[in-house]
Image (cartoon, rainbow, N blue to C red; front, side, top):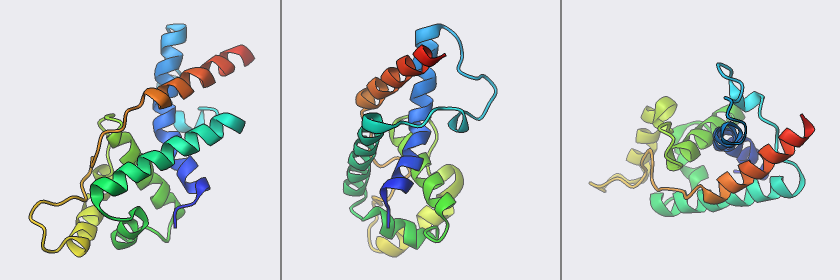
Length: 156
C-alpha cells in the first residue's frame, strides 16, 4: 500500500526538476550541471514537506481517476510492489510524465504497465491505464520549489 514516505520519496523526483528550474531562474546558473540532481536537492521539511505530500496525493488521486483503478492495484499487477525502489521509481516517473517532463512510467516499466492493463482491462479496446494518464498543473509545485530555492539560497 502506498504510504506517505513512499509518496514523498517519489514526489521528490518532479520536485527536483522544478527546484532546478527555479534555481536557474533565481540565479542565472545551472543547478549542479552534469549531476544526478535528486540526491543533491534538499528534502522538504516541516510545512513544505506537508505541502509536497498533499500535492503528491492530489496528483495520485487524479491519476487513479484517469486510470479508473487504484494505483497500488495497478502496481501489484505490474509486479513491483515487493520492491520499495521500484514503487518509488515507477511513481516518480509517472508523476514526471503527468507534469509534462518527457519522462514517464513506460521508460522503465512499459511491459509491466501493459501487463497490468491486460489484467485489469481485458475487454476494453481503449485502455485507460496509460503512461501519461492526465496532466498535472504544476503551478503549486513550482511555487513550493521557488520558496524552497529562496530558503536554500539564504543558507548558502
